[in-house]
Length: 371
Image (cartoon, rainbow, N blue to C red; front, top):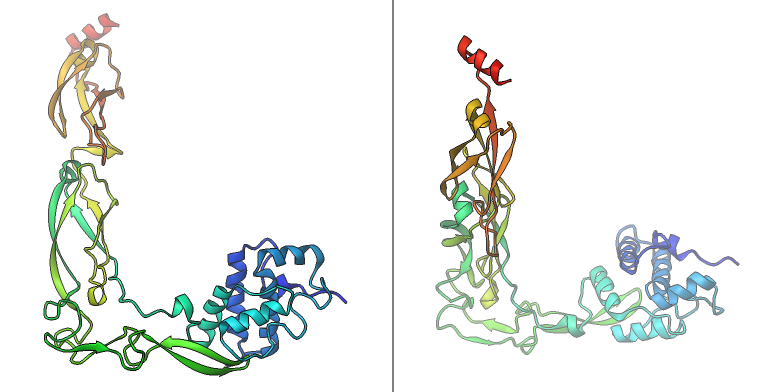
C-alpha cells in the first residue's frame, strides 16, 4: 500500500523550510477545523498527521528516506494519531500525540500557538502569564529642512498629536486617591483556568481573567480624564536635532518620543523622515557638491584664477592654460560633512568654455594667426 504524501497534504514543496511547513499547517488547520463552518474533521486529522511528521526535522528526514509506512503503523497512523480523543491539559496531549508514534510528537510550543489560535485560548505556561501593559506605538513624521540646514545641521520644533501620559493619574489609570486592590477573581495572577470540551476531548485551559483583563489589579474608581487607560490624546511640542550631513529620505530615531505606553509601560519611538529642499546653486551627490562655472575663451586659452562659491564660502580656483570645456576640478574638503564621522566631502567644479559668437575682423585674424 502506497504511503501518504505529507508534502502534498500540507500543500508545500519537498524543499520547503520548517517555517513554511509550520505556516502551511496553521492555514490548513484553520481551514479544516471541525468546529468552524465548512470544516472537515477527516482532513483536519490528516493535516495534523502530516505536520506531526514534517514538523520535526528528524522525523521528516526519516520520512524522506523511508516514506510514511516506515515503522509499521506509520508516523501518524494508529490509535495514537493526531485525531485521538483525550482528556487533560496541553502537556497530556503533547505526551499522547508523541508517545503513540514512537516519539514522533509535535513541538509543544507550536501546538500552543496553533490550537490556541483555532480554539481562542491560551495554552498556559509561559504564554499564560499575567498580561503586561503594552508599550506605546512607534510613530512616524516628516520634516522638511532647507538645503543648507541639511548640510550644517539645525534644530526644529514640531507639534505632534499623539497619546501622552495622563496628567491626572500619572498614567496609572486610577482616579487620584482611589483604592487599587488585588483582583478577587484571579488572585492577582491575571489568568483563570477553565475546562473546555472540544472534539479532541476535555481540555483544561488558561485564559485572561475577564474581570481585570489580565492586569491582576482592580481599580475602585477609574481616572475620569483618561477613563482608566492611563493615556490621553494631546498635542506635544518636540525639539528635533537635525545632524550635519543628513540627506534626503534619511530617518532619525528619537527613542521614547512615540506614543505613551499603557499604565506606566515604556513609550514608543518617533521616526522622523527628512525631506530636503533643493538648492538653486548647488547639486549634492553623496557628500560631494557639484557646480558649473563659465569661463571665457581667453581664460581657457591663457589660464586665470576665478572665484567659486562653495557651501563654505568663496574660494579661488586656478584655471590652467589650455583648459577644455567639461574639465572637472576638485576642491578638497569643501563638500558636505560626513554624517556620524569626521571630515568632509569635496566640491567638484565643471568648467564650461563660452565660445564667442560675434567676432570682429581683427579678432578673427588674431585667431587665424594663433592657429
